[in-house]
Length: 124
Image (cartoon, rainbow, N blue to C red):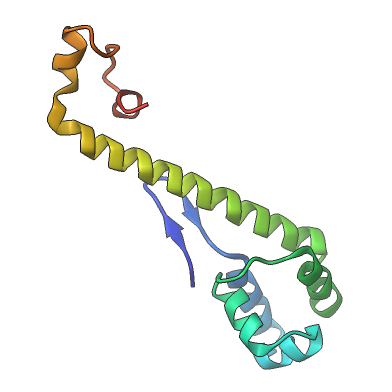
């Protein structure tokens, strides 16, 4: 399962919810694939977060699982947004670690960079 993490964000793919719903419905991935008209491989990739949950698949899930397409679309949108937040936060952390040896406080005293004590502001 493709779960992305940073210090404050976690991005969980919609497939995790699909997997839980399948368990509640006592349905296998194979059965879901057949009922959605998709390959078992695609369902496996969807559940593992390797392919996006498209609007077409959301409508099919609504028909088969009786959960509105808007719910599935919302999960996918939230997942994609969370991935971006995780990536952004992790890149800031990398930049902070890169900048530490340069002695930001000394550079600020020399007027080369603005004074701030917040590490995230020091790399922006």
